[in-house]
Length: 238
Image (cartoon, rainbow, N blue to C red; front, side, top):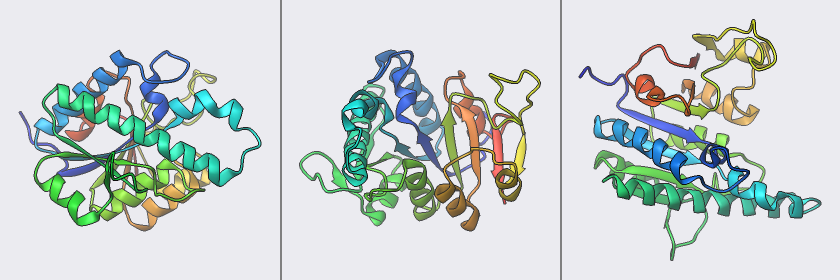
């Protein structure tokens, strides 16, 4: 087997990706398939950290959150990411992968607090580190958490997992003539208003010269192909 293209990566998973075809919540078959892909990467020797969103859980309570204070709603979303992180870690345990969940908000009875040196130690030991609760602050998305944690741990790239296999010139569902970019630089992506990540996360990756690879998490084997440096998805670079 050829050598992976990266030593340390940060995988950004949306909460919605865990739903599968369900309206909300966690689809067991979907999470098992994702974890199988993650396990393949972890066993290849790549140091892997994960930031997980909470949309799949928060979507179920969103109607009741209408009119709610934004900060309160964001804290609810952070707690949803902790639930997803625990589910992901447990699914990893079932396939023999040791994972550690680290939360940006204190819930010591449930998960460890985020401590950077400890996270680095776990990665060096070959454990998968799952970062939960976003940045720990309201008004910041889990995309921003991915850019922040990726920068902090010295990841070589942020792998942005989506339901689309890259960044396109237009919405491929609406425009059949849309083509996928193999690579594009940050300034070009901004100028073309391509929705790669939210603006804060995108600016942080650009400033830290941290490339982003956008790929499809629902495409079998895509994660491993990305890690091996193959032509999969779209690379956003400086």
